[in-house]
Image (cartoon, rainbow, N blue to C red):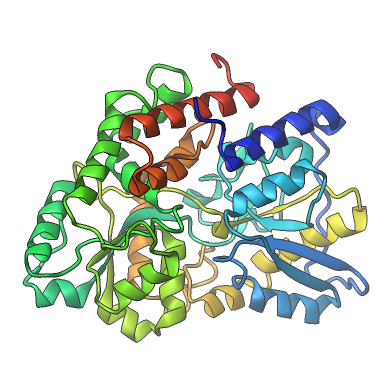
Amino acid sequence: MRKLSAIAAAAVLTLGLAACSDPAAEAPATTAATWPEATAKLDGVQLTIWAAQNSNTVPKKVIEEFQAATGAKVEVVTIPDPYEQGVQTKVATGDKPDLAFWQPTASMLTALNAKANLQPLTDAPWLGQLAPDLKDITGLQDGTRYAALVTSPAVEGVYYNKEVFAANGITATPKNFDEMVEIARKLKAKGVTPFYEMGGDRWATQWWVQVLLADAAKDGLWEKINTGKETFNSPVVLDAIKKYQALIKEGLFNPNIKTAKFEDQGTALLGGKAAMVVQVNSFFGQLQAKADTAELDSKIGFFPISPSGNVGTFIPDQSNALVAFKTGDAKREAAARQLMTYWMGPGYASFVADRKTISLEPSVPNPAGVPKALLDVHASLATSVGSMQALAVANPDLYLNLADMIGGTMTPEQVAKTTQDQFAQLAKAAGTPGF
């Protein structure tokens, strides 16, 4: 059996070290923290925020304004990809920032040992300002809030080039997965690359399998996997992996799929070198860095997809949320809470305007210039289903195993078995019954 990959191992290490050496791991829930005024003076206070390569520019504007208002100094430190592995490894050895971008799902909060390592955000002053359907959609573990949602949660779906569709006689978006494949075959017959995948950077490979599992997720797949009634070896999951491989072997993807990077994916779709990309919201952030809203509205569209219809797969990612760490420095911990209060309070309108992104607070209108595709992604949340990351008790390295399949070193059966073995070990480390 292949050993746990680095990310899964880091998660086990984080849980293991915290459980064995940190008394906070067994401590009762702490009393709700006080929340400083958003613009209270913080002269001489220095804060550090960890961010990934696709989130390190997100807070630039709000940090500048917070520093000007309070006198604090805030440094953003980029943790190289794979981000989650780097963060978990550092935290497991006692290295903590004041705040970090983090995927706010229960499984990833567990991987970070939230109870021991993170400040609870109970009674945060901005919570009442959030849209009711978003307030409790994510960020909770065992009933305690540990993550602050700052942008619209990501949805797995299909970004497509409108001009490529129109030029090849595609007048309507597909109504289900099989219709999308038929469109892809028509495009290939005309010499167009239907789909573009970033096998070199690996992390997006799992979106294909997860959208193929959307209907099963709606029917309780992840709860069944959590309780051992199904596994990644079960036909429902294995068949999705096999279908993904079959589409690749059919030649419906970019020829350089094994080596293509995230940046290549955005360039190809925006430039019309490919028709469709299965991705999440952070991909659209890349497109926004390459083109203005007018160009994006004319070229790029979005539709959710599942085997039975247009159902998105909900997956809040690390660029959507912040966590604040317990560092042992009460002054810095309070300052971290204050930065969150400023971000989601006085600074929020400026933040969403700068990012040209969806407002999560009804009292703060969406800024002018939010691209239509981003509005469509947000609208799909209402009918989306949970992803593996959102609903499973553990988050195995499905994407790494799928990348190995793309590279030719694993079969679909090996992908399923390795992923299940990782899941079981992570679930056991987290104390999940039955594992």
